[in-house]
Amino acid sequence: MKKARDLLKYYCTGMVLCILLVLMSCTQNPFFDDDKINQENRWLRGDLMLDNGMPAKGAAVWFSAYDVGTYTDHRGHFEILMPSSGGNLENGLFTLYFYVNNYQLESAAVLIRDGNVVEQQGDIGINGELANVCEFQQILSAHSVAGLHVDDNGVEFLTLDIRCNIKSPPAHIWMRGNNIGAFFLDPLENGENDLLTFDHPQEIMTKLSVYNNRWTGRILINVKAENLKTGTYQFTPWIVTEQAGIPEGLKAFVGYDTQNITSAYLDFPFYRTGGVFWLGNDGLAVEVIDLDGDK
Image (cartoon, rainbow, N blue to C red):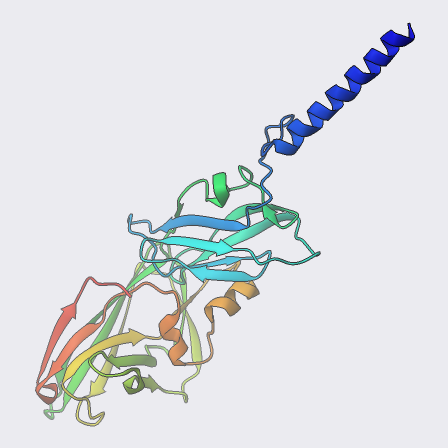
């Protein structure tokens, strides 16, 4: 009888050891199929696209858990490596935000356990990849066109028009004054130090609510008075759309600012088309170079 009990004892001990070895070698919970155990996964990856099917290049990506962000490449792809937080590892459900100023804010839910991404939970699939491609929905489009205007006194003006199509009115737009009171002209054939900033600080910042499907603005520049030289220029109007739900950390990351006009705006994630033109013969000719290119 004692011998039988000893054999049973050895048998049970062996079974326990085998089970422990199996558990230690698993990358997936053998008892629950709800998520993967992956102690090495600190990456978040994915692809973003626009509602016209084009890749969302230069879109901002910001993760609330660690206040870290990046921008998508020309393919609309992004990768974020979550920083190590030492002994203070994050746990819980957090939000990964995707942002372009003139598109609706998008987001994805990310479950974090002991500082690592839990796969196949929330909006995350395998290897930290978004389970689905995220698609931005446009708030408004912004297209710029250059031209020439000569007044009754023979004074020549460069005309810079911006045409906005509002997809789902109303749209709320910040600008200087009641028109485009601030903008940039970048001489593309020269260095960055030649950037021209046009601002009218005597005019207050205005938030315009547009309830129609279309809004247009026009700027007139006296070519000779501004001493504009022959060459190729990029026209960038200063406008910022406003929408609810943007976290303060994301605003800080992208440089969201509705009160100050600085050249940092040129790196702000805002998709526009047109705006490139050639000014020739001291303003006697204007040729639109790029009607369809985006910035």
